[in-house]
Amino acid sequence: MAGKLKLDNGKVLYLYGVTESRPANVPTMIGVDPLAVVEPLESDGVTCWISRVAASDFEENLAKNMENLEWLAEASVAHQRAISALAREIEVLPARFGTVFRTEASLRKHVRGRASILKQDFERVKGADEWGVKVFEIEPVVRAVGKIRSGKEYLKAKAALLPKRRRPAQDNGELAEFEQALKQIAAETAAIGNVSSGQRGLTFQTSLLVKRANRARLESVLKKFAADWAEARRIECTGPWPPYSFMSRPDAGQNR
Amino acid sequence: MSDGSGSIVFAQDDLQDDFSLLDVLDHVLNQGVILRGNLVISLAGVDLVYVGLDVILTSVETALQHMSPALPAETAPPKKRSPGT
Image 1 (cartoon, chains in turn yellow, blue):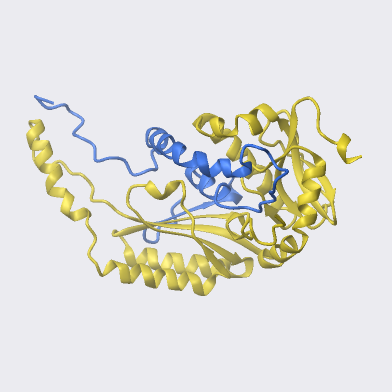
Image 2: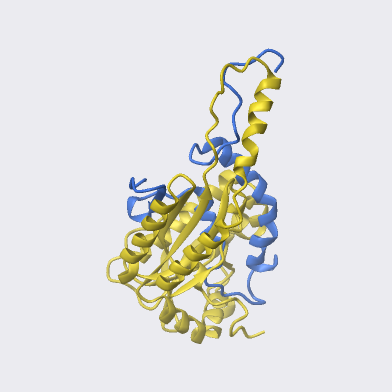
């Protein structure tokens, strides 16, 4: 009975992602709570990957815990590791960090309500990975000009370097060209950078959904621009990520 | 890792744990599949992530600047302290 499915012992269901089926070989995965392994939960033709975690950590105190960098670091990396381990075996729709359900019944209800959206998303990301690309302006190296003997001389030397940090306007054209080259390779692009947008020197950031067959093309474009920009800019590329940024928006197909 | 042609850094999951915390947070908090509604947790559901996000930005940035040598650091003063500083 659905009403009896409310979890006891103060546990809630933490969702990592959804797969179309259950792969034959799944490694043992430790989730965001190191005491609870990630387990499959079949629901309406798909498999949800969950672990049973303490409600006190992931429901009642989630917001507070996320302000604790140490807690957030461990939990977010565990979330990512579990999904990546799964993604090595099968296509997975990753859940955003912090997606929690109180009961199996509520999880199943929402899977059922979004079945068509999930199916569309499986099609969108099939055979593709997410890649993060960032471009940083390279700041001038601070060199000691002669001997600096006082704080005043240090400040003068530092001030002399500041104008060099400003990039000329025509750089925008190069970044636009870079963005266009990436779009020609990617199946889709998405905005990203809620957390890291404040990094010093960061001037461009995007997330790409790239078919695995196009991975070499992506690397080729990155290397070309990196060579062209030489000392002016640095490119950072991370991936492959599960396609976090390419899931349908929460209000898509939502029954309210 | 750098591949030596121009200035480019690849961090790949294949190499295990080569992602920075900032990158992990960018991706795991960006979106993901969301299955939410009025039966999900009562504390505004997963939107708590975004409510709390502005709060954690400062602490994440500050902490990483101290713990990660890979992040561009503030222009440093000369190591040998000068008189009057």
